Image 1: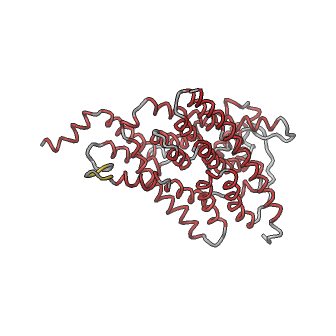
Image 2: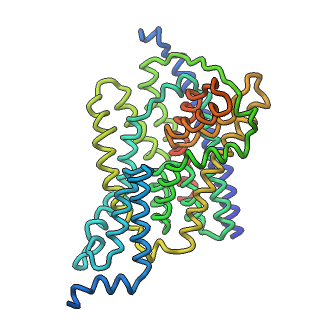
Image 3: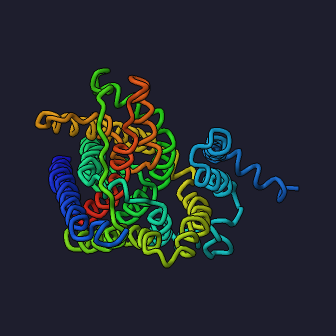
Length: 44
Length: 371
């Protein structure tokens, strides 16, 4: 059980942290997309 | 005469079958009368009845796999059905509210807390780590992701996980208000938020799903089957030249897969697999996960409020689960209860859409860490 618990805690750290990392990168990409392709420039 | 009574006698000899037939009826009742996820609960309910009637041949006929088993092997074992369902879901999602306010993406991440909380609790209860992770992923509030992950990890609790994932999703209007009210004050729930969305170009909307695929593929490669199919569906919607395909994905594809998925998942609803104490524990853990998702989202918003001048209504954090659009509507309703003039639906919808991305990323990351 201790081994499983350690693995579960590792999944918490890497998994939840990983989601934050991916979502933060997506956040930055979304900002980038909005800046590179603004509605006016695309004529929309 | 004996041949005619063979089925009845076998049914009486195994009362577990009768209990499962009753459970099948309850699932159909919830689907039809209460309209809780009827597209899945109705086929699953009837499927549960069929697989628990003795000698029917739906699972095995003449030593060969029966029709349900064939469907299960082709659609679930290969993970094809949940993935195909994602194309339709992707085609239904408008990432506009999220792209116009991308900050909300972080709430999608925060509200996945329940997954990891349940994995820890399940490990403490003595579950094998793969089963613990499969129970945790119920809290992704995303049926196809739950099936995909539980199947990839070879969980023996597939039936319970499916029932829990879909029934709790339907119970979000009951579960979330209790969880949110437990961790927020009346004053916090009444916080107003200004909404100043940026306009989003069509080019950005088209490039968004493509970019997400690349990022997910590079950072969390195990999530790419889920993310890729979801984003493919969204690309069909946004590209502007495949409206027919987008409509088919949203309607025909989703409907067909839902029918097959609901029926063939009932393969895992045989009485000897389902009627165990562990099944009840798994369902309890799933409920705990849904509650902790909301708590995680709310607490993250409260944490951000410590550093922000313009406060966030912490309930928006709870909308970061995948149950779209139900969760954002629940949060708006709660806001209106405290102050009829409080309108936070758009922020909640953005967080809710973020939850859909975050849940598939979560599924992929959990798989990546365990496989």
